[in-house]
Length: 274
Image (cartoon, rainbow, N blue to C red; front, side, top):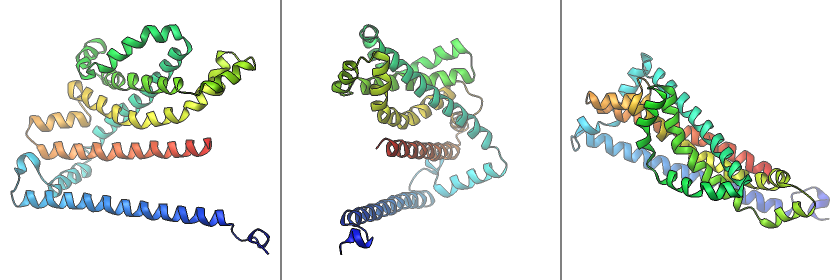
């Protein structure tokens, strides 16, 4: 009596389980090595600071940064700044992805418009977006809108180019099948182009996490009166580099959490598409 008749796992199931077990084991090993590297770097930094191998005024050290962040957390002074920057970053992230995708759709829809806008997109992508910050401040005023506009200037063009590139790379044979059966351009986009480009759009979200943070922090450098970017500028002004480094750590931690959240969404979407 074979395995199927007895209800036992098939050979393919056993191989799959072994593969997944090996994959989980490898992931555990990767995480262990990552944490070891982190703790070693922090430990060396701590030792270098306490033994004065480095200038602690400029580079501080982990325990000093932890005490500062802890004290600012206890009195609640750090949380309004985190909230302001998080709101600006999320708004820039969502709007940048949305506008970039919509612009890519418009360009794909009109081949003529695509040819017209192509050199402008190339120039805008090469343009240093930070230089546009003062223009946004003058145009929108020194406030939230200028900061979000700075974030959008960095993320929208990149999103447009990536998503539009994904649209163009869709297999032309799929498009021809829809056209053979009488489908118009709208049906081609809805049934072929957009579904085939979902992985690229989702992957763009991961890129936009970093771009949104860059845009928001740059905007806060220029105009903000609150936020993590403001704390960095304030720390430099009063020569409190412990505050600067602590704020950078907070930014790194929150950005990592956002990235992991987007990665989780990507895995769920890809799983449903398989």
